[in-house]
Length: 163
Image (cartoon, rainbow, N blue to C red; front, top):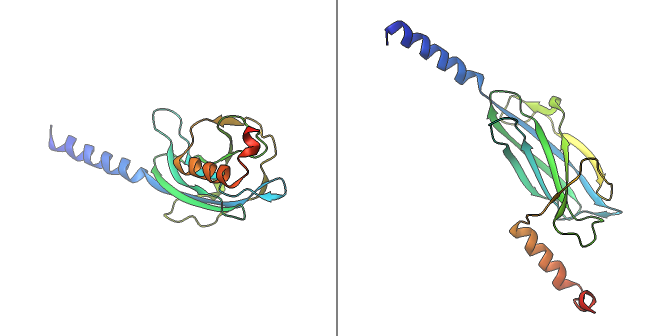
């Protein structure tokens, strides 16, 4: 390889490296199940990618006792990230297996080329009794979720489940 080719290759690699940029986003809100706070609801913030690039989990957690949450995170990408907020819940779900899963796309105006997002997308108050378009089911349950379900089962009158 000639010196000229090596210099061109080095410049091209530097340019490609500089094209990758860290992007961040944040979302907050409150979840209800009817008139009650939807507490301990699993929530995740994702960058959903198309093609061979795998999706990136930016942040995850659970709603607090008031049903409130704040998620924020970021990743390094060549193209703009597609920030998606996912909620996994059992509100108004009966005894069906797994959890209801709903997804919301965060507007691009809340995605920033920075380590910390400049502003937080406030999704407001969502009542999870709503039947959302394109709602899915998530059949895999996390360890924490199993623990919370067991706590709820043990704290209620177990006799009513069987008699």
